[in-house]
Each structure stands twice: as structure tokens, then as C-alpha cells.
Length: 309
Image 1 (cartoon, rainbow, N blue to C red):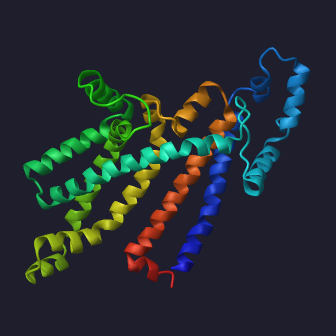
Image 2 (image 1 turned 135 degrees about the vertical axis):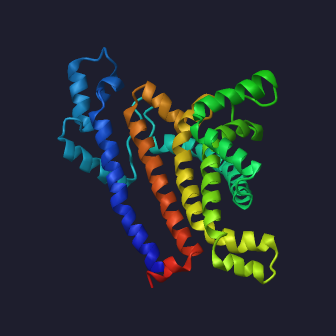
Image 3 (image 1 turned 60 degrees about the vertical axis):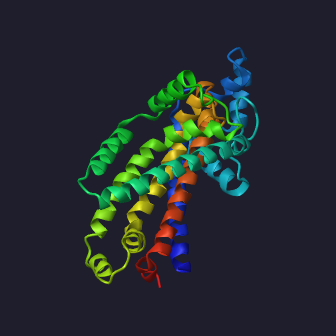
């Protein structure tokens, strides 16, 4: 198991290097002069050129990239905000707890709906419940997050006056954002759970367990679900990473002070270092989530661990 973990950690290094290269390149080719942004459009050309030299913006592309990676690896420094002059990492870490709380809440909603509905749909295949759940899953996959968020605000805030439309100080502030963000993931988890369970419950060992007289609940939850978990875990891990990215729109709609809202505001103000750092941070978190999912594979399925003994 230790060998498997080490191998996966080593494979993460080129992935993270690739992420930094792509993010840096995208920000490098983005129009705009950071020096003019800091000093203002009315600044004299001499001051702008002096600041460009100080920031290293006149260096060749590869030199700038090497210096950028060196700062991250050696000093854990991803720059300073052009607008607030605060370290970008501080700006991100101040906002990340809100984004993480939103993503965890949305994933809880998705799993709470997706796994039970998928199991029941597989057990009652072709029933009215199965047909209805698959129609709702199709709607969930097709429905944009921002559109669902607006509909929830219109229903629960404007008409029913039950839930607040913005804020993040009380538990009820999380209900609508979690539903809006988790709806698509719930639909995908439902479809994957149903598909995986249908494949498993037709296996011979399931018929054998039933022939031995075991309770149907034990057969489904212990034998069938236990062996159907691998693809479900894969989808859950992937969806959690996507929830962190999808929080950009949700946080903007519900005025949640997270990384998504920070990125939107930074794009409006052309604060490229914050945009670059935020995208890089989300990509790194997404990579580590995938690593944890791979390790969870090995824990759930001994056959994976045996490959690295």
C-alpha cells in the first residue's frame, strides 16, 4: 500500500507542473499591462517601464515561468494582488473555507439524493419510480447552475419568503446554494449508481447470497453495493472537484464570499495575479482530490493493492 501511495504521489508532480505551465501561459497571453494597472493609466511611461523591470515583466517568457515556479516551490509565493497589494495566497485562503463548505454541502445533497435513488431505481428497474428518477436525472444534468439558482431565489425568497437570497452567516444560507450546485452532481451520481448496481445484482454471487437465505437488505447493501462502489467513488471524487470549479457561478448568484466570487471580481478588475493564483489553487486541490480517490480505490478494492505488492 505504501508503494502504491508513493507512486501516485510521484505521478502528481508532472500533473502539477503541467497545471502551472498552462495557467501561467494563459495569463501571459491575456491582454493588459499589470504595471499600468498598478500605477494607473495616467502614470508616466518611465514609471511604468521601471515597474515592469522591477516585476520582471520584461524578461523572456521562459525566464518568467521559471521564476514563477521557483517562487511557488521555494517560497510558496504566488504573487501579490495588483489591487489590494496583499499576498494572493492570503486572499485565497481567506475565501477557501467558504468555497469548501459550499462544495461539501452540495456533495452531501448530491450523495443524499443520488445514491439511494440510484439503488432503488436499480432494484425496481422499469418501474414508475425508475422512469421518473431517470427523467429527473436528465433534467438535473441539463439544467444550468445559474438558472436553477435564480429559480430557487424566485420560489423560496421572493414568493414563499422562507430562505435568504444572499449571505453566509447562518446555516439556512447554505440550503439554496447547496441544492443549486449539487443538483447536477446528484443526477450524475444517480445514473452511475443505477448502472453499477444493475451490473452487480445480476452476478452469480448475488443469486448465491439470496439462495442462502440472507435478507434482501443485506444482499443489496453489503454484497451488491460494496462491489458497485468503485465507479460510484470515481464519479463522486470527480464531481467534488467539479463542484469547487462550479462554485464560481453559485457564489456570484448568492453573494457567497468564496474563491469563485473572488475570481469573478478579480477578472472584472483585471487583477491577473489573483486570477492566476485562484485557478492554480483550484487545479491543485482538484489534483489532490483525484489522488485521494485513487487511494480510496485501493482501500475499497484489495485487487488494486495487490498490483503494487
